[in-house]
Length: 517
Image (cartoon, rainbow, N blue to C red; front, side, top):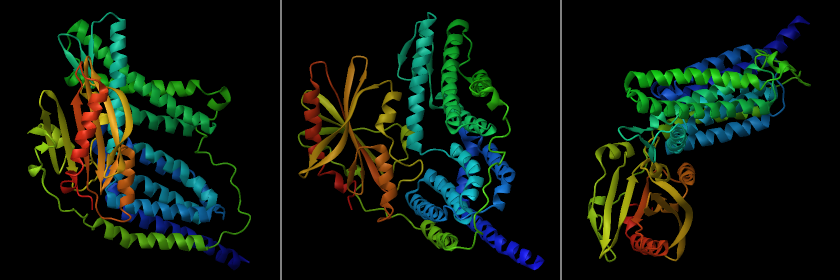
């Protein structure tokens, strides 16, 4: 009888050993990307809490290890599907140079492996630990920029409103607060992301400490985000008030840094307090018994065995090793093209005056090549043409959306829509943006071009880059932007007609400089 029990125990250990080996294999081919993530944690203040979240995740795995003794057969085929699609996305993300997708797909892969090897009980075991880590994965640069600029403007608006409410005369120019003798710029570092990301992570952690409903854990995240955004606005308001009434140099140097840390700690306490106030007396008594307390463990109705899903997951992960090596060493195809140095300065009846981007901006944009020119015709306003080209796109080296950059210059978007222009008898999508700054108005057309495709939406451009990895090793692309001031005597209809006509003359010129195929 003892021999039978021992043999059964050995049989049950085989799937665990295979799971451990498969997870180690997955982490081994993820190691180069893990190093990039660790570097982000060390260098980006808004994600400096990443190591702490990793430690908490490992602690959760240790505290919930009892679930590893009760594998079941439910959901295993779903686990294999998750493993397969995670590997596909991971491979495409390597090819397209999208770091964020690599980190998230490896987390999905780990979840799929546990679901495959131990069914729902293993999925329950690993899910709380894995769900914390996306909160410390830096989002794509274009998404981060969108969020950053949005928060900059919101914080500026709230601060200016508050300053005016206490009688301070202040002028707002985009994200610049003009107090007369001194101007305060709500820079990207002051956007509030350094509060937002850690506080949302804190909200997620707080929700796991209590035995509460899922919707209330979601409420913790909302409260954490709202408090961090409001507190950042209060900090900027107080900075402006100190500058106005005390002439103290609180907007820079040590005091500015110290003030930031003080408000971070206050925000930390407020998030905890707000979350605590939303709990009932019964819920408060469950502190420490959230995901740390494993309950309702369902014993399997039949003995789990080495099944086809397990073999399938192991084979997929083994196949990923040579695939990963191949993709990491695959050089992207850079198509032949003509440099913008020879870009025509005459398009239609318009003649251009070539211009250059300031060195700092060019360094931030990291373009492979670009053209900037102002095309003039008689006494009409000039049409400015900017084309930023990237021979290979990767993390941090992608076109910056004008939708993000426009507000930071003091301009506000008054109308934004997607229109269609005709090219060789076929419609192509183009963003039409009307922006204003006081009495000034500017009409902007822009679009993204990738491998002959015209794309208006920034997110669609990223998705197209990801899917393009299925059929091509090219990751090149460009942003094309046209802009023209609208005078007080010119109607928007006339301005639209001029940009449409210029665009039609521009389309045949572009393939030589932005390769279609």
